[in-house]
Image (cartoon, rainbow, N blue to C red; front, top):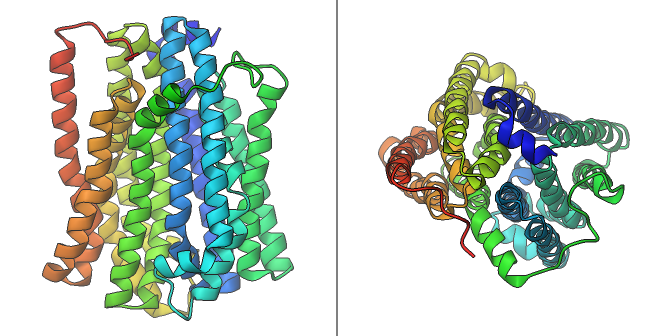
Length: 451
């Protein structure tokens, strides 16, 4: 049984077995983003690229819901499996599926029924309104598949199927690439084709994620367990920090779009969209690392094996720093060559602006992986309060303050420096929280998850 493996196999072996597939899977998602950016930017145009970015905060909410419930369920189920309570783990699984299904249906209705109001709220001007509304309405149809897929994917990892979790993303991304070529390049469906491509990609991933549960190849079954409101609250609360990180991504995009429209106009939003693609790829790698070790941490913490937990955290932190430095160097050296993938090479104004911004923005990668790992650690051990503080700090508090203050002090340069400054300030908080946690932990045994 995978629980025994999580509690007995060597930490280095488990770290490689879980983190590499998770990173690879998230890297494929990043590759998917590159392909999306290439087809939208080159076959539809710069305005379409800007429109997709304006719509992104809405979909960040759906992704946040999936991540909140998915990671909350993974941490809770991992703790319960570590304690040997399979029944409670089954109830948590059923509860998480019902919860994400209900919320995603509500968001889908909003996307389809109140599209124009949503587009205007997100900052679409008259020139971009039609493109933004088209993208939101067509993608919104598929939101339930996206939400449920997230939960199933996180649960598969705690059930000892990290490689299959990666395969889901690989197949979905390859299908997504083929659909991009067919619907956008060949059939010329424009922004509608981009939306359908994204939606169908979600659906393919959903089908693959649900198959092991339908065929009975998992410890937890779709037909077993009961929905419990109290469990739903615990799961959502425990995963709230990771969801806040996703909401923070949406908040960042929203604030940057509004600020850049004020200072530069559509050119600024298009440039930020290209930088967002780079950021998404880098963050996906680091999130994959954190997600990959979450199952190991939650199970061993539930079993009271703190030395194993500490070793996983140390490996994850060191790896995050190395990856972050590598991303910073790569983007600083090849920013223009990478951005050309997303933007028309003849549009030098946008390209120059994006290259300048990317090189400043990239410094955030040096430390943000450490913040991601710290937040993921607290979530995995069911300490959401600390994880929420980190998520609020890096994604909302310092971003909101920085986007107001820094442009006034440094102009356009201040906009691009907002994220690096927010990450550096959050690192101080992460370090303080981890220090206090281990200082307190050394004086007592790991607490059981509150009942």
